[in-house]
Image (cartoon, rainbow, N blue to C red; front, side, top):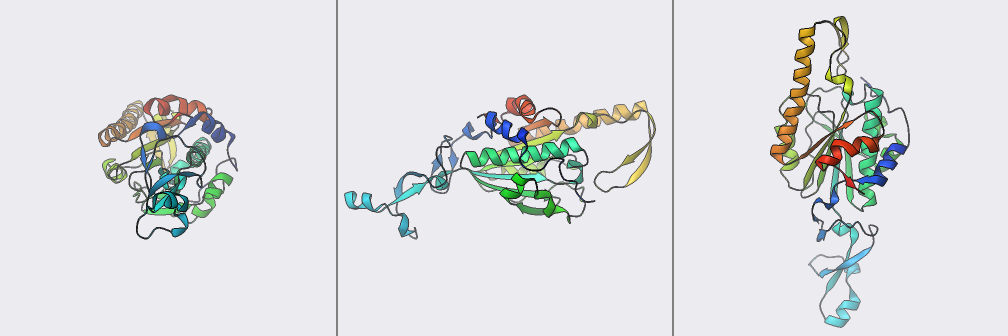
Length: 290
């Protein structure tokens, strides 16, 4: 089933407004960069000079601090912001359920753009990937910001299985954007996400109409992942069982995230993104004030 693009192209005003008020939770800890620690100030661009460190065999001689060598006789290296910046890996679930509803498609793009804008504004080393089952596709920043990123994913076949994500770097911030509407225990996904330290965050765009079944009677249901249609008799008893199962599913994820020390927040697909992030996402520490 081909993926439908979000209804708006380019940077969503929602994402820009949200990035002005909120950012990813960088101040939650001191982040390990390639050559030192980043304290969350976000000062400067990726080429700004930050300080010195001792020379190590194999270092680029172009970055030797010759003025310091003249004063001290010790070889030291200039350290730049890019060497200290936190690593941010963002994986977005691109299963069909993420795009079958216009509101979730727009919220998915808004969250992805918000994460990119927040990370780049802070000088972070950011990488973005689309995931579907065991398939992973790297995404370009320019495609995310232009809204054209889904064009690269049209040939991915449907896959109802839980994503198997292997893009996480050690000691970095790891963000998964997913509705979490797939079967299976969360521990496999969360174990891979949290095993290499750092901070793990799950942002789950949710729709209120998912929490309940359609009105009672004979209805035609469509599997949004496979496209298969079937008829189903909806009874009050079935509606109650579905509502309980839906609630239990997200309670399972919340409990598993707590056990794995990952941050879990559901982000409503209705209303402005800034308002949606100001709720559970802010309370749980998935975002912080910018």
